[in-house]
Amino acid sequence: MKFGFELKSNREAVGYSQTEVAKQTGISQATISRWEDDKRIPNIENCILLADLYGISLDELVGRDHGRINK
Image 1 (cartoon, rainbow, N blue to C red):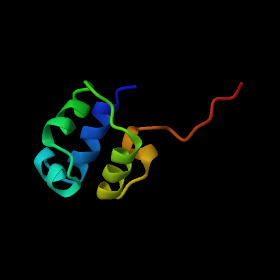
Image 2 (cartoon, rainbow, N blue to C red):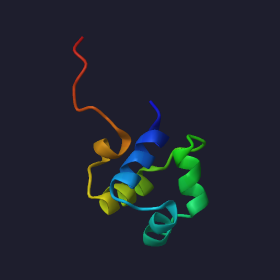
Image 3 (tube, one colour):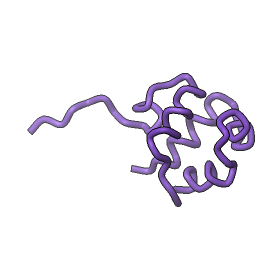
């Protein structure tokens, strides 16, 4: 799964630039860029900050489908 694509899509869906997200969260723009380029993965605390900022769930933030795998 490509978390970076989902992170970027959700950021763009609310109309924020990386710089705006950085200012509102205290996370550096360079760090946000690395996440969106799949060079790094954010920790859970930063995911919570982003999900709250965007007004979405953590599942939505990372593009997780709520379906379950049946064995």
